[in-house]
Length: 441
Image (cartoon, rainbow, N blue to C red; front, side, top):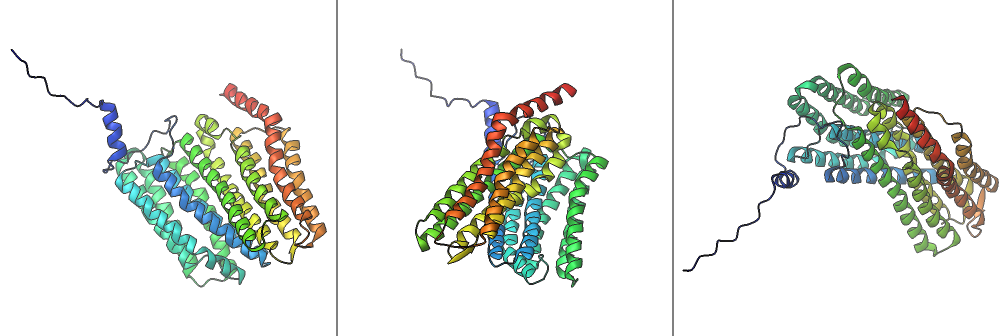
């Protein structure tokens, strides 16, 4: 008697694995009912990371315009236009990141809305040259192209908040308030660009709108309840944008030095700019990630608002380092270069980043440590020396690169001092501050 062998059966996929695969691979519409604000270990999604890349391009474009106008001697208007651009770029990113942390469900509609917002970022970037040019000639930095880009970014975000209000009845009022706030603020940005107001009035309106936008989330969440954003996820998102903005410094260094070498060949100045750009990016990355942001925000989510606002100048200062490196590379292509301009263009943004690292630490820890004062002074001292050397030398022939190498080396040394100081001394005080916070809790 012969038996027929049973047909082979495909192995059964476990139910939890099947659900995970369907979530990752099939992006049908899902309820936007809110994420778990207490979820531990939540990480950024691929669509969030893709979204970030457009902002690095925008930061790079703003830094390039800043470098060009600084080289032309248009310092005041260039700085004003740059501050406006950095706020517009950073605030748009923060708005989306706040919503995505609270309600991002990675379904097809959320992904589509995110991609549309990326288009808006690109359009805004196209408006940056006009913004800087207008400011240089005494006009407003706001213009129709940037406003159109902002509208493209803001309309999908308003729609997403309305969608969240419908799917999350418990936080409906908060979501509706966010949608209304963004819509009203955007109407203000549009009017500031189309109304024929005097430039001082337009600038005052822009400042008022920026302050209102920063204040509104704090007020409405205290009054209506917190959106379900995840503090640990927020910490990771801000850290990642800082990281890739530092990558823009590396890109600026590479591009500027490549152009310099192509036209003049390798020189001591080119080598100093290349080495210093890489050292600055690496050292500031090291210093920034010595702040235990995720650990502290997960324990104290109420500190997230001030912590995130401290990143507004942080993002701008990091990108401005790339502008300073561009200024240095462009200047040494001339027969003579202004060493004062190079020293200031590099030292000021590096000093701002170092200072904001200390400020961010203090905001996060709600602690003051006297030992940080000498450490901060030691980090700033090489920057002061760089400016003194640059202002003393003034105009220098490009055939004499020694002082340029000294100035750039001193600027890079500042970031190294900050890292070494924290690794030797500062980390103990960070650990002590965390332990004190835990004990008080």
